[in-house]
Image (cartoon, rainbow, N blue to C red; front, side, top):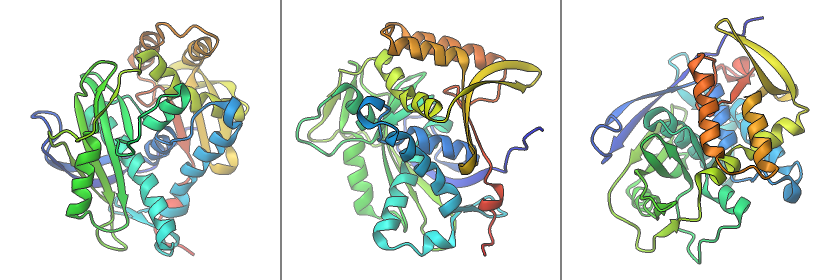
Length: 329
């Protein structure tokens, strides 16, 4: 049976001090619940190193994804609001939810407005390849690749409105990374997802000032091939954990074999093109050289056939429409 996509969210945003021609100063960020579930999965800090963490990293991202039906709702005006349960959380619980949402919304902002196809937590890369940052903890959360170059993002979430103090801290941390793989970041932004008025919709504030942090760090140990493998590892582990099978997904008169897994009790399905999975498994077996170029060649082929996949080639499908409807019992 043909799956009818759920209606989109529409979250207003403001964007200050970005390079000319990159991001409009204001607008509405439109995205689906599937987009949000995907962003929650890929922006998490948990690594995909199964030898060290077993299935814990998979349970961690299932937990992150399940925050959506538990704590978020969509109004008839497409606003993203918090559920009654979310509004009843204590301060520490609310802060944890806001932190996670801030990362995911920043990921969607970078994907939709800066064309970042792969964005992940810096700590996830660092954990995978044992990269150190010295004594500083003041560094950006996320980094990824856009066609124009590397993008660095500091993500914040707030249960209330963004204040001036938060904006200043955001500006310092988002400029903490001065180079990646020997290149200066194309854009380094700070992004806050907040709920300025209790019971009303989310808004996004993003900023890209030019000042650099006093104690900048360099990520010159990063390579594009290692970045690609670290990005997809949690997805591969999730496919393994869920008992992945080949699945022919017919879209727009094309048949493409995906490797898919269905977490039915969570209302969540995850899939990657089989060719991409095979190349990534080859990299795990030692064929790392050229992975970045191979991944993008596979993605170019998949996207050229107008298959309904996300920019990184993943398909994430959720079955949470009834849970997201405003009006709880």
